[in-house]
Amino acid sequence: MFNFFKKKATEITTPAAGEVILLDQVSDPVFAQKMMGDGFAVEPTADTIYAPVTGTVTNVFPTKHAVSFKTENGIELLLHLGIDTVSLNGEGFTLDVAENQNVTAGDVIGTMDLAAVKSAGKETTIMVVFPEAKETVTVTPQTAVAKTVIAKLS
Image (tube, rainbow, N blue to C red):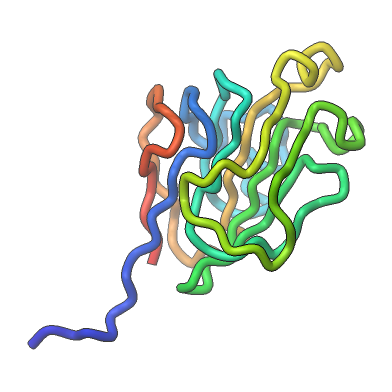
C-alpha cells in the first residue's frame, strides 16, 4: 500500500560554488563543535549566494552575515556567511531576501564579496547548520558547483 501522506525528504543544496567540507573542519569552535547544530560548510570560490532549501526566510540578520530558513517539513536551517563576520556590520554583504519571503532552493539570495571579507581579515567559510536536526547530517567532502544537492533530511 502506498502512503500518500509520507513526508518527502527535504533536499539541501550548496549555497555557493566551492569546496564542501565537514562542519568539524571549520576554524570557528562554536560551529566545529556543533554547538549551533549539525551541518556542513563550504569554502566558496564565487560571490553569489543561493538559497540552500525551499521554504520561508524566517530571519535576516541586520548585519547581513546570516539568514534563517524553515522548510515546509518544519526543518530549520541557519546559513552563516563567513567567520566572525558579524563585526563587519554588513560590509561586503548584499542580501536580496526579506523575512517571510518564500524561496526555492537555488534562488539567488545575495552576495558575499569574498575579496572584501578576506581583506578585512575574516574567513569566507559558509556554514549550513540545522539547529533542531534530529538526525546526523551526512555529507561527502567534494568540490561542488552551486546548487548541488548535498544532503537530504526528513
